[in-house]
Image 1 (cartoon, one colour):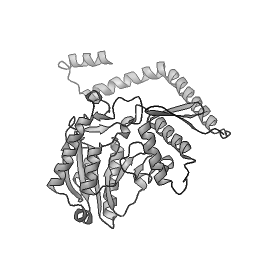
Image 2 (cartoon, rainbow, N blue to C red; image 1 turned 45 degrees about the vertical axis):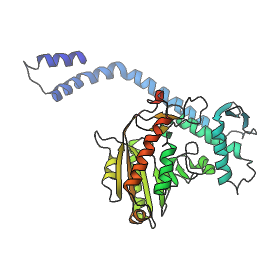
Image 3 (cartoon, rainbow, N blue to C red; image 1 turned 180 degrees about the horizontal axis):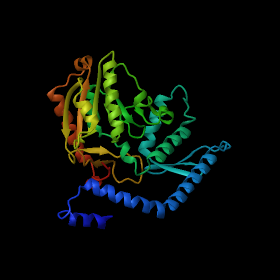
Image 4 (cartoon, helix red, strand yellow; image 1 turned 30 degrees about the horizontal axis):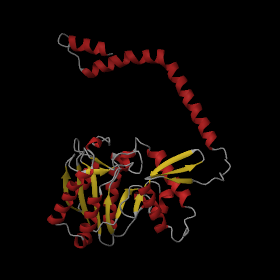
Length: 334
């Protein structure tokens, strides 16, 4: 096909032909060829995948005897090893202590003696490890602590959206897996969360479909709020072409302020920060981030946006740069 395309360009001057007509004619000639020579191989592979999928479904539907084992924890100098049957999960000691504190705070009534802490900790770690692993850790990257400190002091932010027990800054947040995250502070999915007031940080994973739905959800929550409400959204500045979520925020009647933070001028917290194998907790973010502050009228009165507050927030981003290791600047795929 490449050779014929080159020949078409060579003879185009002598016999003009549109590229659309040429591609249509070429496809008409190629389709029968692939059908004759490759249809059988494709059908064999399709049948193999279908049989494998059916066997996996059958295996998953077989009732299993509940395990009588409970997770075991071994502690080391700066990490711990959580083991269940043949599965081993490592965790930084600092994160173990953070998760235990969250569990004790949120489960003081239902498990005052922490009898089920290890089981629920294992379920939490295994779920996140299975769903994100190493390659998907970028989806769990978080804003640095100087930014959260400024959001709390200047804009009254006290809760995160799209966080997890592993990367949360505040003790309350919405998350992807409320069935295992709820014991550590999750209030459920952001898309099911219906606050009537409050100030929230919004740090969606960099998936365009999710960010679009989140922007629409923010508009609805601000419109229906009965008390003061603020959202501070941190999103990638995808402008070529402009992403739909950027258009929703930029054209919102609730928009009070927005500004750009240039790539390589600030740091983010790694999505797999809890892993003992990591050499650093932060990475230098290579992508531009746009910050939107959205408020209803009551939120505007409760947490007014001033030039001084915006300067402090910009300074917080700039201050976070020194937290990063330059070798990690390509950590996240954007």
